[in-house]
Amino acid sequence: ATSGSFDVITSDQVYVHCPPRGWQTLTRTPHKVQDPAVCGVSGSFLLVGGWDGEQFTRQCYCYNHQQATWQRCADMPTARSAAAAVVVAGEQVLVLGGWAGRPLATVEAYSMSSNTWSSRRSMKQGMGAPITAVINNIMCVLFDDESTNKPSQRGDEISLQLYNTQTDRWRYGAPLPGGMGGTWGARAVAVNNTMIVAGGAGGICAQYMLDTDTWIKLTSPNVNHGYSSLVL
Image 1 (cartoon, one colour):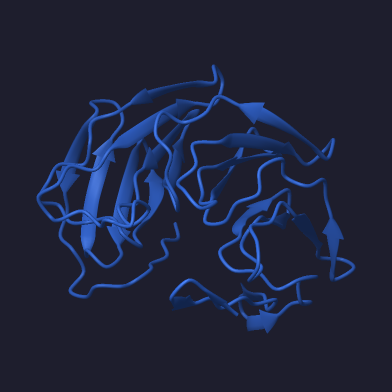
Image 2 (cartoon, one colour):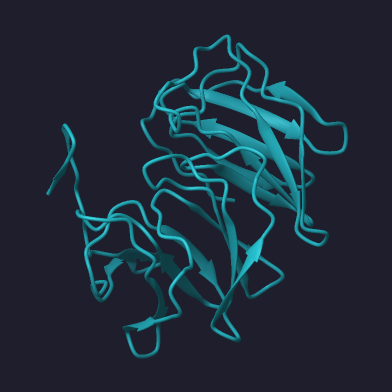
């Protein structure tokens, strides 16, 4: 399928790595999709939204490991792709940002136990493919500089938003200083009381200190990646 002037690749294939058996192929998803939000929750994982080659979708599925099947869940209220999905409070999933012809600031919460969605306070700034990490009850959301279709240069500051999952309040944190690299395709992971952002096309490697609201530049890996993954 195509969209505009670029090719759109949709897929229904899912792979999981289970040591020591290695990579395994799971049951295909009910429909092919590009850029869904995915996260592990309650011993399973959730797949929500995306682009099906014709439209942005609201569909939400949970994978049942015991039956090796996909279970249809309540549809997400807002159709979108390239959103972020983050687990908070054990069984609740926050889906934030994304793309639906424009960057979205929408935040919606899905409850695994009740199979229902609820609205949360919107972000201060819409963004596609937000880069996220949760430190205690604070979700750090770093702007992906590709989401405006105008990737930042190495000298540009990149905005950071902080969300308190208990009070449903957003505020700005210290922006990522210029000179630390662009964030396009980078990923983040929480380590102790900090967030490490690394990889992507800009080769960034930086650490955000939540306690002091400051950034530290770390040694970058000697390779750049279009899209990266971080695992702790």
